[in-house]
Image 1 (cartoon, rainbow, N blue to C red):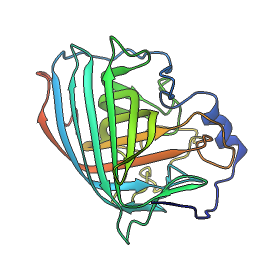
Image 2: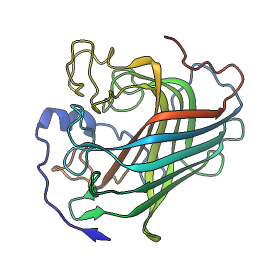
Image 3: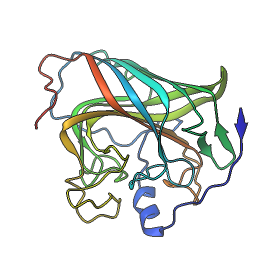
Length: 260
């Protein structure tokens, strides 16, 4: 179920410093970054089904901005969120294939087989759990770390997840973050601007890397234990992107795409 492999780590102290100054996502203890203020609050229910799953990188480089080591994997994700009550659930079901290879979670853990991730959210009972709507995140927005470019989100979640591998609970609790956003990754898995340049947290301009007419779903979970050989510099990560999203239900007033 778990094997170890070797991989080449990303280098660049400047990039590591840029993302180390602020946790990108809520840590396992439930203490997240300062709450952002959404442009609008629709007070409705979001239900989505997401497919066309891809693993984004792995230990060493978990964002793979240039599209290298972005691989298709069998899988789907569902989310059901009640924005008014602050309660929600995100479920991810994956299965590795010979083409996808293993999921490299940390320096000494690689997962193969069936992986299940469940994020539970109750903003009134769980410290640090958050739901946001209609909000710009990452880049130079001042909301979250610049591990992604400026990106519009229909909704975003922060809260603890549990991870099972082949039916065994391997991670009882880990901080996690999801986003239903405008499209950022192209067919080759890269995040590029109109000049074809891959995104970087050190890019002087952090806008212009997304397609407002498209839509995608992101899921990440990571530890907060430091690891300078990983990017971002935490000991373990899983990063997934779903390129096809079916919006089953959306709050009244939510416009998809929001522009384009």
